[in-house]
Amino acid sequence: MAGPIRKRETHIASEQRRRQHIKDGFRKLSEELAWADEASSTPKSEVAILQRSIEYIKELREEQERLEKQLLEQGKVVE
Image (cartoon, rainbow, N blue to C red; front, side):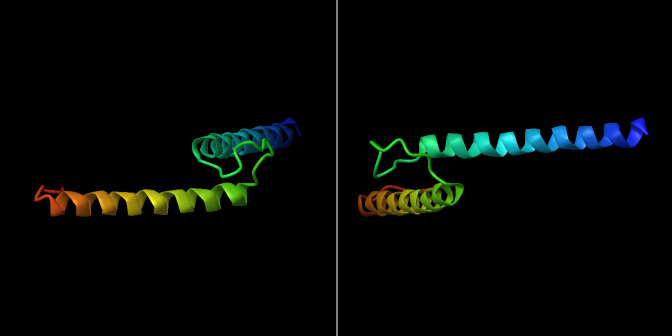
């Protein structure tokens, strides 16, 4: 009987580590994002973090396109 019990304990511990890694990842991602309500210290939901991440990536892409266009207008090569 020790085998199945040990296997279950190992699985539970592994799942707890996995969840902690996900939680840490969302925390780090949230710290990197610029929030409009930075004064508010309320924790952000995972959905809010993902939505803001998508918005931020779109903003970065738009900025990159704008800068590339500006360089092309100046006659510089964009790679």
